[in-house]
Amino acid sequence: WIDESKLGTKSDGLGSADDLKCALSGYITSALLVASKITESLVKADKMEQSGCRNTIPLAAIAAENIDLGLKNERGSLTRSDPIKSPPQVLKRGDIQRNESLLNSRDKSQTNHLEAIDYVRMNCPPGILSDVGNKTDRLFALGVVFVELFAFGNPTFDADAINEIKASANAKSSGDTKMKPTIDSTNNVPLKKRRSDQEQGSSSEISGKLALLGTPRPLCALVEDLIECIRGEFRRDDAYKTFEDVYLDLQLMINEPSKYLFDNHMPQLTISDKLYGRDEEMLKIQEAYKLRSTGVCLGVIITGEASVGKSRLARSIDELSWQNNGTVLRGKFDQVQESQPLSVIANMFNDMCQLFAEAVRSQGMKQNLASALESALGSQARLLSRFLPNLPRLMTLNFTQNSSSYCSESTQVIRRLFCKTLQVLSFYSPGPITILLDDVQWADPASLLLISSLLQCSKENKRVFFLFCVRDNEIQHSLDSPVHNWYQSTFEMPLKHITLANLSEDGVNAMVSDTLCLFPRLTRPLSRVLHRKALGNPFFVWQTLKVLQKEGYLYHSLRGTMRRWMWDMDKISELRLSENVLDLLIRQMDILPSDLKMGLEVASCMGANVSMV
Image (cartoon, rainbow, N blue to C red; front, side):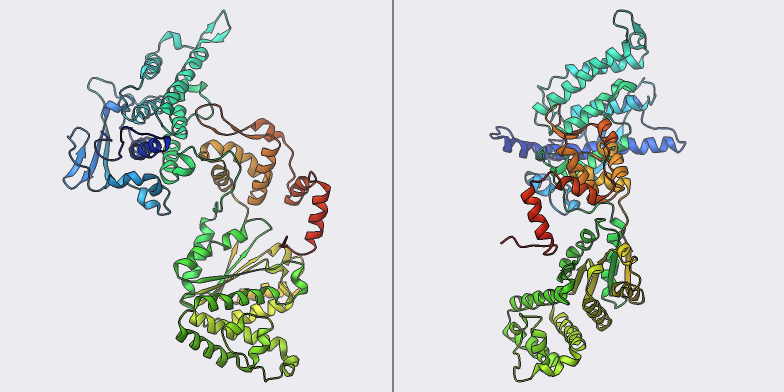
């Protein structure tokens, strides 16, 4: 019925494995939408029961033959019993052949076709009691529905295993004495336990047969974890416990198929550039960026301890700037560069000059920009060019003036010149200019004065936005330092302050789930231990994962239905790890060759970034 309704397409005579995957992906995506809608109905029914209402979906209704689906189309609702002559217009499933590229698109709304399914109705057969059953029975019943759903309507699919475990389920629900927890006197093993071990083989057999049909392995594992629920209290820890968990996993497969649906990830630990558990902070940055155009907010200061994710959060400004046709200028201070006053900001402004020189194509625009800079800077432009070598690419410099006359007021003059340059370039910029400065706690006093001047002169400039990252805990140790005084002065400026704390347990779990390409319900026990050991510090969590892999506590297994990461929870729980990021890094560096360690010691004296050329 799904194939005929054109929710998905499937072709015959396929050649390569890639052709098979491409063709099946259309059906799989459509079947996932149906599975998600069915599960959503069961989640709602369970919530009604928890609120005191009667559960309206009996156990007997959770069967493929008792489920009716309705699709929206031009003529209204199209049910499964209706003859299907043309695809529902709402879905436009002719585009499903480019399914994988569609699924991996950044616009996730393209894959959200659930609204095209009008309704899901589960009917209890006449003469059958309306018993809702227990939770594991209902989860198992859903697993049987999914087996038939993801078998692609294949008439050659061997359903003997399904019939066998269905019979086991019927025997269990009817109170079969063989299923009672009596003891076998021969082997001294509970009969229920022995019977459940047989059922476990059946669940693995079914998922294996689904895999042979081309069903992605993660989807086979999902089905297996549902079928596993027939074992009741003896089910594996990975087995599902609620319909809500099933629904969340299906949504991940729909929204992020390259990570959670298609089994194409390499067995290597790689961390993505995503932000985890920072939705509230990102929203604050977005709101501040919007207020920039009204003159209410000049920018944002992000504070927090080392390695908590300040720099990564600040980089989220890139997409906002891109959407507004803006430019992001970056600078990062370090302790070594403190001996070179203004070098960080000067390099950033020099890059901006180069960007304008390359971006401005119109001869008229170039002349207007040069005239504006000459009018603003005058003969003092030569002094500024000592800091900005690319400035002559934007304007003609006057070399007749003796720059030595500016020595007595050079610092004030230079600050004023930087401010005027920013005002001119922001006016001719096609979009807002964002100035992002990282590790400001290491800024030299001259740079701090310049930052304050830039903030002051930009109060009325609605085309400039500032973003600072500061380790406030290090500033608090030096109350009389210039950086402490500067930081205190920012509270009197139209700036928003965001304090970044360590990740919550859910944030760590999102990070671990994404890194290991496993559903959050599976990684939650591991994440709980990592959160406790790393105190929620994202960098420390990542380093701990690499240590666990290197020492064999975290490994990639090729056994079973799904190739996935596995771990020894007992050994990891007992493992003693440092609660300090520095100690963990020292532990990793201790095993490096002595020549390499010597080279790193020398390079560390040259700054945070060293060219190896």
